[in-house]
View 1 (spheres, rainbow, N blue to C red):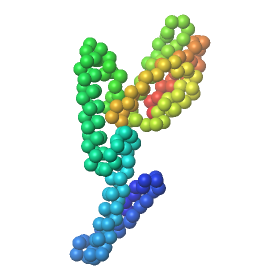
View 2 (cartoon, rainbow, N blue to C red; view 1 turned 45 degrees about the vertical axis):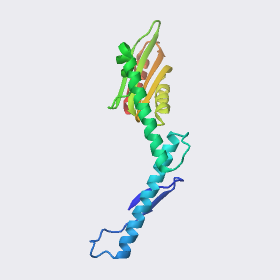
View 3 (tube, one colour; view 1 turned 30 degrees about the horizontal axis):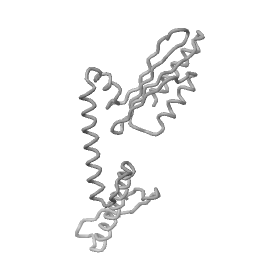
View 4 (cartoon, rainbow, N blue to C red; view 1 turned 90 degrees about the vertical axis):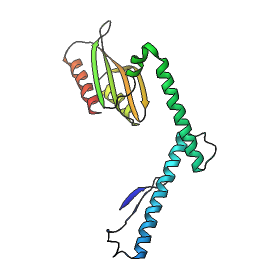
Length: 190
């Protein structure tokens, strides 16, 4: 059984039947199986071209060859621009590269005291890009009783890195330690 979704997001499925040896499969069954497979392939290709057009909305020619040509051209331009930026960063290159997402997933919370009575935490998450990441991190910070005072985010190649600064008022006692541990558990659960 093959499954997927069409342009409108509706789920479709086709049963290709049990696999029969080529001698036992009738010509009509073989043609039907091939037609269904081709229809699935065309639907998937059509959806991928729509995905490219969403990424590059200013492509004027809408035929498939022009879409692919323009996408390759823009990706090569992006690749060259990135290489130029990395070459021009110079001595701050290591700082710049530290903010790019890692290939491995990570979730780190580092705490310390700031000037005054506040406790600060630096929360670093590197993971696959997902729309719910900001909402999940904000919720975890609220549940832990902290206040987000700064955030930076970078997304490259489907990977996202978020660095957030969180502040708590140091009222002394176990409750603050419990809140910080709660945040650490929530972040590592992401």
